[in-house]
Amino acid sequence: MAIRRALLMTGAVCVAVSGCRREASVPAVLAVLDAVTDTVTAQTAKIITGTAPGGDAESPVALDTLRGVVQIVGNEPVTSVLLVPRDSATAPVVLRGDALSVVRQANGLDVMVQGQRTAERDVASSPGGVPVFVVAAFTVRAADGVAAVDGTLEQRGPGYALRLANDSVCVIGTLPLALRDAVGARVYLVGSLNAPSSWGVLRRRE
Image (tube, rainbow, N blue to C red):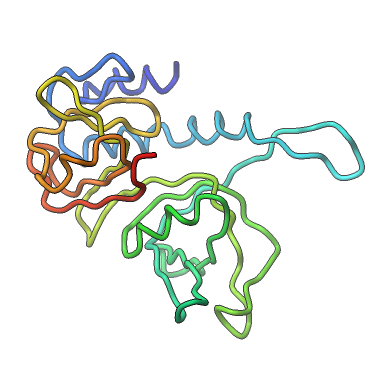
């Protein structure tokens, strides 16, 4: 409910589940997502449990968030996926986890990841080792400095829309022809939702 209230208060095009009232820019959509990041993280943490050391009871595991650009380094077949933070004072991390195959498709994109920092260091990426971050989820935020948004592509009547990770729905003004066969896939759109300047597929429909 906190997510729904935040969306409604902004007056943005994305209204949780119930549909869209008017068109909004990608930056406006991202502003909404930024406003509810802490809420989404808290809600996600509630469903990710682990066994406390020395005990049998399960307890919530707090999630960390980190934003940066995805970079694939190394040579096939041995490669690592790095997240290079926008803040140069923050060290890069090696990404791992079940979501990694999808994160790889975001190579070069600015993303927000949710997950857990670990004490492990990846020595294959650097002689001194690079901290490991286990990814539970991520969202695309920008491409080459231009705001971007990602979600599952849906067909709604004669048009198309993007269902975001928080279950809000955004109408797409003009869907690129190359994506018209990608309904059900997770895609990202860059620039205006009315006429995206670029796009890509992160995960094909199942």
